[in-house]
Length: 92
Image 1 (cartoon, rainbow, N blue to C red):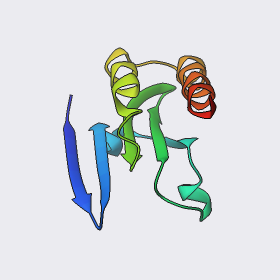
Image 2 (image 1 turned 180 degrees about the vertical axis):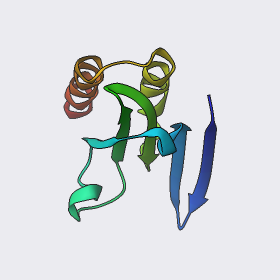
Image 3 (image 1 turned 90 degrees about the vertical axis):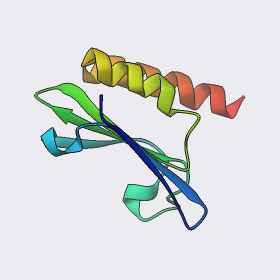
């Protein structure tokens, strides 16, 4: 699976999978897509209902869980369940 990362202005940006294949972009964590802070934002890229990529902005701790979902071509329900688990764990 393609993977790239970069450190830009103190923010680690990581992408796993093929964002260019996506026909839908879904926010999974954070408020960066809504004009809020970018740090902590994770975005899922879906094609035909399967997760094909994920991008994390200052959220490296989340990437390993999503990487396995990209590899499996997980659907929205599985991705949403993991997002919920990770959000719950972050608030504890």
